[in-house]
Amino acid sequence: MALNEGADLKMELCVMKFGGTCLGSAEDRDRSADLCISELAECDRAVVVVSAMGREGDPYSTDTLLGMVNDPPAGEKSCLLACGEVLAASVFADVLRRRGVEAVSVTGWNAGLRTDDRDCGADLESVETGFLRQALEKNRCVVVAGFQGMSSSGRVSTLGRGGSDVTAAAIAVALDARELLLFKKTDSVYTADPEKVPAALKVERIASEDLRQLAWQGAGIVHPRASEIAGDSGLRITVKSHDSGNRVTVIEPFVLRSGRYITGVASGPDAAQFRITCGDGSPFHEFYARSFGLVADAGVSMDMFSVLEGTALFTVPLQDSGTVKATLDRNGILFSTLSPCSKVSIVGAGMHGMRGVMARFSSALHLAGIEMLQTVDSHATISALVRMEDRDDALRALHREFLEE
Image: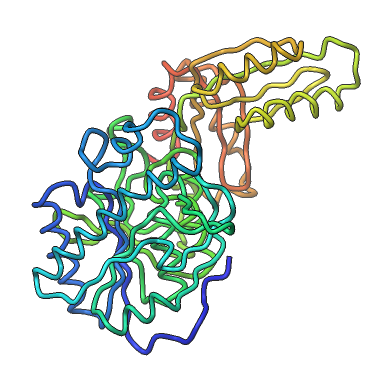
């Protein structure tokens, strides 16, 4: 992704991002303005990226807007979803102006975010900074509508859930900002979801790669693509509390952790496990390729693949299980399912090459009486599929084993 284009800004620049819960009420927006003005005292100019105001049920949240139409085409859906952030940017710029800050709002496509040709869930490909630079020459603060850009075909596109994090990280890198500040209504980033694991520990510093892996495994901290952009570029990200303004967690390209190689535990969204069996005598490799291709063509993303002698296991998001069942039935593929399930994971780039990690992982779950239905690993993660009713017990067992020593 091309991020640095155009002449360098001759100024100290800070990029901030405020999520929807930081903008949901007039009081929240005033608090966000206080924080923005405080940060402006330390820099010459600022770009503020905003999400749609509030959450589901609030008048202008993304989910509320989506509920106003019935199954729109992808292009229309993307245009509708982009409205929440555009409104938030305009409103927040007005709040800043009333507080004496020279501020202007711009859309994501005006800000130069260019994506691939998908309408919803698009991938960011480049940031054309000319318009932003001109706006920053005339204004102390530019408020950018997050989560959106312009596709290669010239249509409005959206980046998917958490896309405002991606917007903010990409702009920070493109404009060579000193750092990216993420304001969130939280008192810390934790080693696990505290609602599921009461013993979760606060994390004051975390490597961008570990954060990315936690996000991919289901931890709702920072969008994994934003973590990837930060890690590739060396961008420093600081998470700050919206309530206190204090630093919560610093995200850096590399963090050395003496004596601890696991950063956190996480669980993914509800899933269904499928077991398919080759029953027509065709070569196994042809059966796998055909079956996986059919599911992909149905628009469903698969995870946790395992194959052995004519049988394959994989998981799909629970809401897509009906589509997969119909697809397999229609094509005469034998299958069975198990649901609801959840993938639980330990994350830590430091585990690569360490002996005995999988033994400890499986032993912790065994001692907790939890059956592993399937496993998968990478250089920075080990994951197991468990029944949904075992998810929280599994997270607590893994946290005790690896993080409460």
